[in-house]
Length: 233
Image 1: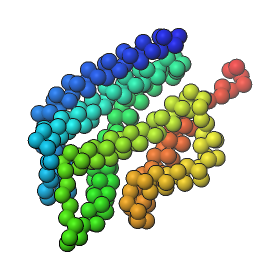
Image 2 (image 1 turned 30 degrees about the horizontal axis):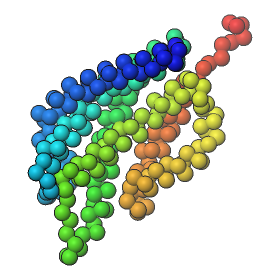
Image 3 (image 1 turned 45 degrees about the vertical axis):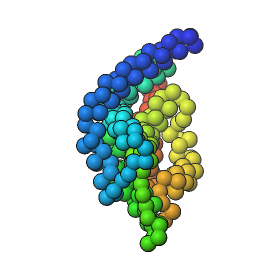
Image 4 (image 1 turned 90 degrees about the vertical axis):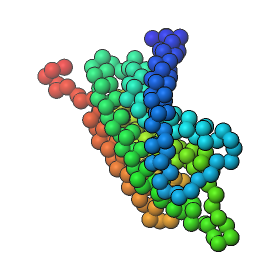
């Protein structure tokens, strides 16, 4: 494919993704009150500081819900765009990649909802004092929680990305294992950024990231081309 062909393919995939996201966002709008209750379960009271803020929050929640519902389609369009870079025998992995990407996205969102967000909110709200009361804006709170959910969903794609990077020849299992110490340091840096500044929270965040890296190394081994026996060459 030429450069213009790639641009045309990208435009087509973005167009299909936006259509899917638009449909699922409309569906999500009808469920946004229930989703909003789930997202705000950690705080007793929230306020909105502008007349239209509550309505805008409903739209944000609908968009986040739409992304969650449209995740399989979005991953499918992404991997279809990557497909021209793969050989014919490698393109068969696309269906598996869509399923695995969708499952990992759901697991990442669940991990953020059940672990990351409660720990982060507990830490951030711990600075409240008798003279300093938290008055949380619904827009800021939902935006923060939504960012955590989507970020974790994307981070959990690491094994799939490492699999196809190996298929494309960008990395090798040997290279990944050689730089494992550097990866561990980077994992703890990311964990320190995403979690409160206490050792327990950072370790709790680092463990799944390390597991994802190890799964990525395993996926890289599975993606490594196998040499044919000399008799078959």
